[in-house]
Image 1 (cartoon, rainbow, N blue to C red):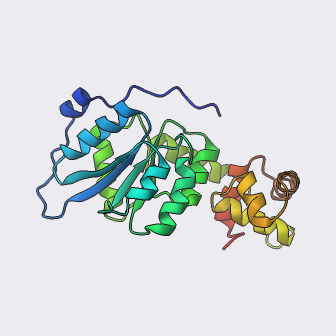
Image 2: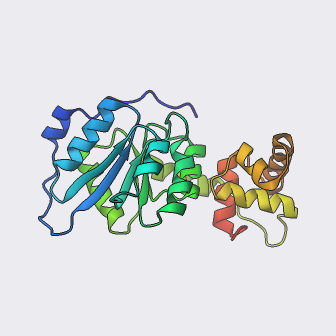
Image 3: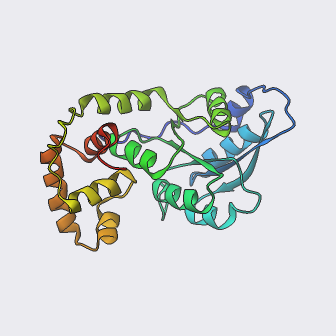
Length: 238
């Protein structure tokens, strides 16, 4: 699915017009923003800092910079773009979850294609929001995440539901996946892509592609996201 063109950035004026009036609480929710577009990054930071009960503790233009500095006064929630220069947001989620398990990473992106949604969720993202999310709803979502919840934009949630519906039910004992295919399938559910899966398994990208075709055929699916949905729904991997 082709990515849509980025919507207009959250401008300072829009943030001022849509400030969320929260209840006064002693505990302030710390948030970090990882976004390479300066106007968007500053607009989100402004919105956070001018919403009662929240503070923007960090704002970074790259995942590399975030991973270096976010441990200093760590936030509760990290809003992260996917299409970043260098390390992608999805790759960053895996590292962030490993280094700072108390930080809840949330994708804030223009992408709503199946593969990126599943890769992000499998990598450990606690939410997946689109950039056109209204400021008020964005802050509500951050609060839900900080309280231990999980959030998705409605369009994203519908894609996830549809993928689970499309994946055919497994007949017990008939999946027929080889041990290597099972290991590859598990890596896919953890958010790996072809190159990183090849590195983990110690095989070539060509061999991974060969195994993927075999997995699709045996599971009666047509894409990586459908294979992940099937694996998660039917408990093929643990």
